[in-house]
Image (cartoon, rainbow, N blue to C red; front, side):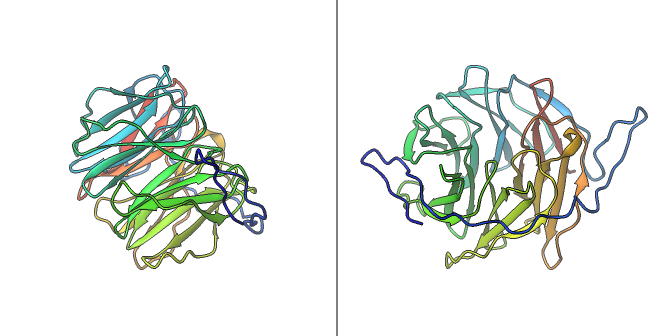
Length: 314
C-alpha cells in the first residue's frame, strides 16, 4: 500500500484498499421537532437557522482563530471567500481570497494561525494562512492528486490535512511548524465522499462516509498510532463534518441525512456516542462546523437557495 510521487509531487494509486466492514443500522435515536407548518426545527440548545448570504457553489468549511469563527466557501467565480462571526453571532462581510478551486475548501486553526486548504485546477492540494484572519499568505502547493475536498484539524502540536486519494482510500500529511510537511501516509478505507477531521482530548479524529453510506471514525494519539475504523452508523447522503465544543469536552460530528436535513451526534468526555439528532434545515451537501474557545459552536450549511446558512449553540 505504498504511495508514489513523480517529480511534480503527484499522487499515484496505491493498491490493496481496506474495507469498512458490515452494513450499519439505520440512524438511531433521531430527535425530530416540528414547527407550526410541520418543518423540522433545530432542537435546543441550538438557535434557529439564519441566512448569511453569498452564492455558494460547493459546501463550506469552518475553523476558529482567537475569538472568532471563520467560514470559507467557493463562490460563483470559483475563488475562495471567507467571513467570520463573533461569539454573539454577528457576522462580517465576505472577503475574496482568490484562487481557482475545483472543490469545497477545508480549514483549521493551528499555532496562532488560520489555515485554508483547497483542491486546485491541477487536482493538487494547496494551502494559505493568516495570523489575523484578514491578511493572507500566497497559495503554497502541497501536491497529491485529490479525488474529493480535503479536511484539516490540529492536535498534539501538529496540523493534519486529510484527503481521499485516487484509490478512494484515506491519506494524511502533517506539519509541526506550518511549513515543513510530511509525506502522504495511507490510512486505508474505501471512502465515498470527502473526509472530516477534528482534534479532541489529545487525539486526532478522522471521519468518513463508507461504501455502505454509514459514518466511520478512526483516531490517533501523540505517538501517531492509528486505531481501526469504528462504525458510527447512520445513512449519510454527503460527506460528514466534525468539530469540538468551545469548552473542549464534547466532540461533534455532523452529516446531511435523508430528507435533506442536517444531523448531529456527539461524544462527551467519559461517555459513549449519543444517537443521531435532527437539526432540521434544507441542506445541499456536507455541513461545516467550528467553535470559538469558551464560546458557541457554529454549524454552517449550503442551503437550497445556494446561500450560506448558520446555526449555533448559545
